[in-house]
Length: 499
Image (cartoon, rainbow, N blue to C red; front, side, top):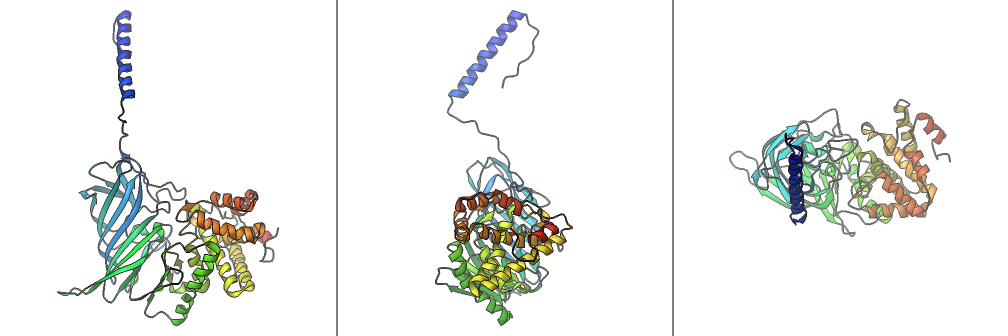
């Protein structure tokens, strides 16, 4: 750019100088226009968030994570990481001068990018990595982060705590975040990736994780060190970070190839009761029922593992290896988590506001399983339970009401979302008829398989399949707050909604 100086010159001279300057500018401009070499943009930092309205700093911009290799050496009884290396393969989506990971984990020992030492800073849950040289848009790059220590956890937030150590086991689960307490990650469902998880534990412990168990390596302890087992799990299906897990404990790990091409895995503690084991005996039949309704099972494995009882007190649909607190081992819950593999795991929310697409579908799937396995009366009873839970949730909300389709970040796990979402689908089934409803479910699972979708996507697909204008239907159900009065008016007898 030319900088024009004001000079004290006669007017004629000044005009001549201006003409010469304009001629020079035109010549340079002409050269730039004729040149075939593009002008590169200056590298800039990747955004510290992926753009979720509820969680602005969840996820990161500037790159797409492709594959994580997580290599952890654990002290199970101490609940700590002796040594870990996270290797993240990614591709840049802009010219990067630096980029972020979500990371609340323990002490970092070193970071390299493409083998060269990198510098880094930490601020809260944001880890900023500054590579030795900028990364060009479209280039693939590999980051290795080495770290060790005991993750600090928030005892008051069981959903985002992420790391659970009992003295005899460690398990890692969390939603919408939690993975970031034990490895650096682009922690939003919009950036799915594949995983290799390598876990070393001292005998007599075993380790389960997402995917297929591909190897077990044993070492014999020497000089006072314990013998160890190293388990390698390969997960080649695109996975959102909140669905990544591991469970290190005294486990029996059993694998069986199903006739449907799915590998069924049970990673159960030795003392799991026969009653609890019988609950899981129905899992292959559940997969079959939901495959008929939703299309082929989307992943290579269907695994289940059971944790020690803790204040987690829940189950989480971690992909291909579902984790249950012992208190959560119940037939409806197992059906719920199995259905999530299609609805929530394969088709994931593009933003956390739309969590009803996960939980409403899974809760309604409890009724669909009850209908298939136990008949119409069992399905009706399951729906009545949703009505009761929905009414209770509305009363707990201090009369202000909650919107199923926009509950707010503090109500992601409200029964208004779970039970209310199930009732949306039950009423939609009545509204458009069984044929279109089940065609819609199968098309939803197929069209957005391994991807992300929003409520607007679902509404558009429901209208496409049914041929009806459903804007008013969804505006009423999803975006009009449900106060106790509204719930009582809609369900005056605690049953079927009034027209």
